[in-house]
Structure formats: C-alpha cells, structure tokens
Image 1 (cartoon, rainbow, N blue to C red):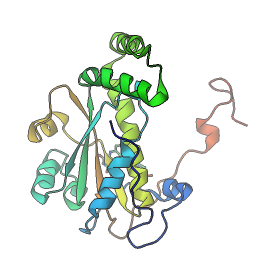
Image 2: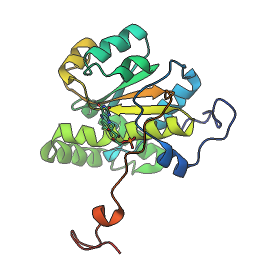
Image 3: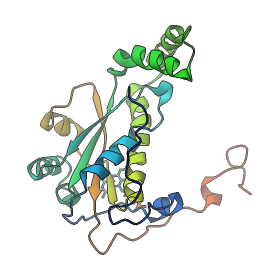
Image 4: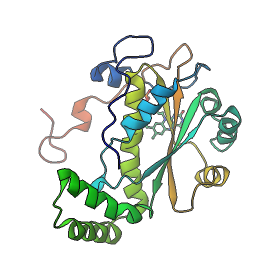
Amino acid sequence: MQDKPTNLPTTQPNGEPLKPITDVILERRSTNHFTNEAVPDEILNAILQLGAQAPSGYNLQPWRFVVVREAENRKRLQSVAFNQPKVAEAPIVIIALGMKEEWQERADEIFKEGAERGAGSVDTWEKAKDGAVQFLTGMQEMDVWVNRHTMIAVTTMMLAAEAYGFDTAPMEGFNAAAVKTEFGIPEEAEVVALLAIGRAAEPEKAYPGRFALDRIVFSESYGEAWK
Ligand SMILES: Cc1cc2nc3c(=O)[nH]c(=O)nc-3n(C[C@H](O)[C@H](O)[C@H](O)COP(=O)(O)O)c2cc1C
C-alpha cells in the first residue's frame, strides 16, 4: 500500500484558497448541467487520492473506480444511464464499483501491513484477519457491505472536488448490468454509483431544502424528541 499523499494542490486552480469544510458541505449541489471546461489532471488526481483515504471496515477498501474521460466513452456511458445529459456533458464521470469477492485476496496484505505500520499487532494480525473474514462472509450481505464503503469514498471525492472549486453529480440512474457489459466490469462487481465532475453550467441547480433536525434526530432512543 502507499503512504499518505503529500503533494496534493493546496489551492484551487485559480489560486484561491481551498473552500472551508462548512462551505464545501453547504455549497455542494448535485449539478444537472456541466460546461465543457476541463478538470486539470492534478485536481483529478487529488480527488482520487483523497477519495482513496476514506475509511472502510477493517480497512478492506473494497472500492474500485473506472474514470471515463473520452467523449465517445461518456456517450456510451450516457446510453446506459437513462440518457442523462450530464454524463455526456461533464469532462469526467467516475464509475464507482464495490467488489464483493476480490477483497478476500487482499486481506492478508492489508492486515499484515496495517500491523507493521503500527495500526495492529504484528503477532496476531493473522488471527484478526481470520476473524474479520469469518464475520464478513458469515453475517453480511455483500452488496450492502460494498455499497456502505464505496459511497463513503464517493462522498469524499464529491467534497474534495467542491473544496477545489469544482462541481459534481452523484447518480444512481443507470442500468448496472449494461454498465458492466459496456465497460468490461467483472461479474462480482456492484455498480454503486456514477460521479460526474466538472464545472456547473449557469444557472446552478437550486437548493431543494432539507428536513429540520427535529424531524430526523432523536434523543437517546428512537422517537424521543431532539432537544
Ligand atoms: C446516491 C445518489 C444518487 C443520485 N442519483 C441521481 C441521478 O441518477 N440523477 C439525478 O439527476 N440526480 C441524482 N441524485 C441527486 C439527488 O437528486 C440530489 O442529491 C438531491 O435532490 C439533493 O440535492 P443536492 O444534492 O443538490 O443537495 C443522486 C444523489 C445521490 C446521493
């Protein structure tokens, strides 16, 4: 595995500082239409590097990403994504995958190296790994499990893009089987989401509102008013 990336851009491409996390969260909108402005390679690299830092159960990182940039391939992706215009408009669309089996092959490496890096015990990593594999294969529905983790990475990418001044659109509107066929994706993969990245065309989509906390947050047990 690699160390933390150290050379990521620390400003937006126009030299402005990165957006603070509160602005990132509040200003992010799911973009319906993109301009054809390119996203610099170093920003795309930073978005991917930051997404790869997302947490996952046992650090198993079951996500994989296909980055689609060629216009012809985005058109092909659009045709299996309910023809959503943003898939062809945005300069980058990432196909986010969760691998339901492949993580088992990487479990030894992850547990051993994590222990060697000080995040586990070098004497007991094998036992810990066996316990994890038993827990996951015995008790989890793998499609749910890979979705849980992959969406954290996708969300991290969305927020990273916003911090660098770019816009995103997460999508569930696609035909997963057709996406797999078109892009050579293995059978075991769950197509979790598409993420378009670029610059929003004006006017940007309006804020659609959110529930107030007293409708979604409870205190101590379900149904107890939040105060
Ligand atoms: C996982 C996920 C899948 C989505 N899929 C689509 C989609 O296929 N097409 C679309 O136009 N919007 C899609 N959206 C965008 C939502 O409609 C949008 O997030 C929601 O209306 C809230 O708006 P906001 O993101 O601008 O705050 C999706 C959002 C998420 C989180």
